[in-house]
Image (cartoon, rainbow, N blue to C red; front, top):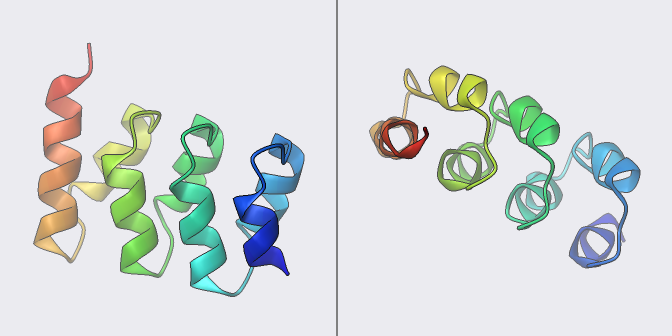
Length: 91
């Protein structure tokens, strides 16, 4: 059910904050992939144990500098490269 809640376009930030605690990585991935995901949630998701979630954070336009900086040392080179590219795009 949480997976479908993460798809709900009208879900408020409070619901999204609860959903990033879900044990199912697919729910957290869906939240991280939302265009309206708040930067504070993306910052928390940068430390997610699942690589797909971290990759979504690395490429997200709302990801804060602090999240991207932590992803520079990611064990997956692709995630680190994407975070590096996003950091160069920031003002």
